[in-house]
Length: 600
Image 1: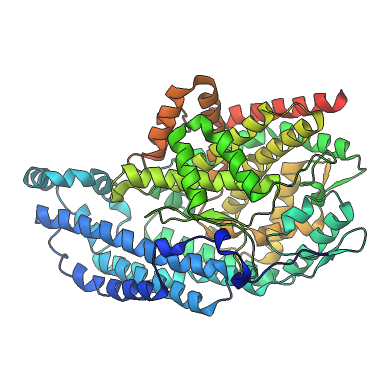
Image 2 (image 1 turned 90 degrees about the vertical axis):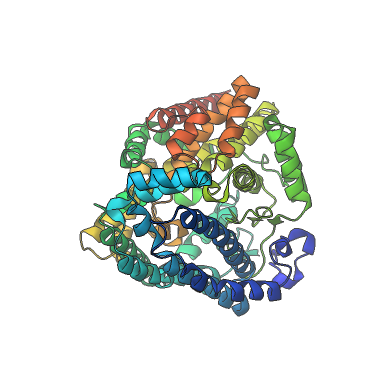
């Protein structure tokens, strides 16, 4: 019997997230939406006062905090409901309403940055004397005033804010195509049994020991995706033109600098990552050669990348087993951390299984009041257990930052966002390896750990390099056509996998299935985050409580400092290439260990 994917209404409540903790009903959401529509009028009382009245400036920041909390709740609820079933027009409409009210409030707030930047230093010193409570917003004031060169007149800021809803278009169009409209034919295994093919089932099918099934899934997926390659390329082209427009409007030298400046990340970090990975390609090539040898194939294809290297080592891991194992592995972080994990498991923070129309992949929500939420598409396998650990790392990072930081510094930036999630994954893997003596199972786990490196450090850096190439194409006036993107992507795939891997023609289309390319220079932070996480996990396991204390201080810091400084709290200096080089040295050592095991 082939697997049946249920409709949303048939999913047991216990396996769904309890969004009623945000809004008890759709009607409550509607009331919150109506109330927020009046906020632009309330904000109209502040223009012209922020640079003349200390108390007005403080009150404005307090109101901005309130708006941030309320808008995040409104948007996250609508977004989560829509992601439950992307074909549900009711929540598509609410999602659109949430974006519109967010844009309206952003327009009403557009006056603030120019006014705050215009405050003279001596005036700001007087404001602090008149209203000491204003020191709560030191970080906010610094972040605004450092953008002096990039903030426009109030009129231009209002106009830019008004483009916000329109700017969502390319990503929304692509999401609707990929998650709602694009369907795939079922694929057959070597025995002729059919299996459903979706965005969520593709990788599990590629993990199968059945090479016929892997090849059929790979070919069918990219054949169908290729039929829409021009539409997806046009969406990407529009997205990059939008990013270019904002970068130019705000007088940044490049799209990359515009993106990294807002997160206080030196551009050198981006380029240093790519350079460090290029210098360590030999280790990736060694892994590819070992995979080819262990699979016993004459030619290694892209549909052989995910399959386990040993037979009968893969285990079915139920969601209940995954939860208990993650709890045991992360016990090293202390009883308080474990208690929070258990609370999330017990109180429906998680939407667990795939259903028809559900958004593919996994994520942790931006909302963390009263608590975070996690979307999964759990498949009862090892990869899904690691995804659980990963997303709960995000969730508990959000929980700690919200609990210990004021609203204004409770949201951490993307650069540090992947550290907590990946640290959980590394700790889980180290736990499993420490409790595994069986040779075949150890080979299986080592391969999974190596796949984490490959998928996160090498693969995401390849994505980052491709994204940089797309930006340079756009900045040079070149259209992002499907053919041009396929050519560039295939060349990069050959560079990163080497001569032992057949870069099948279909893989040239892989860019079309990566939603993160619609997020402004996001993917490189998976690679830097993974490198930092490996260093932090090693420190926790080697040093114990002092390292745990530093790590929790980092988790609780939100955005109270720049991300490079925050990671230094946890003992990692990402301003140097050492964390990346150190992580890749470990990758090389793991390849050597795997080779030794296979030769015994």
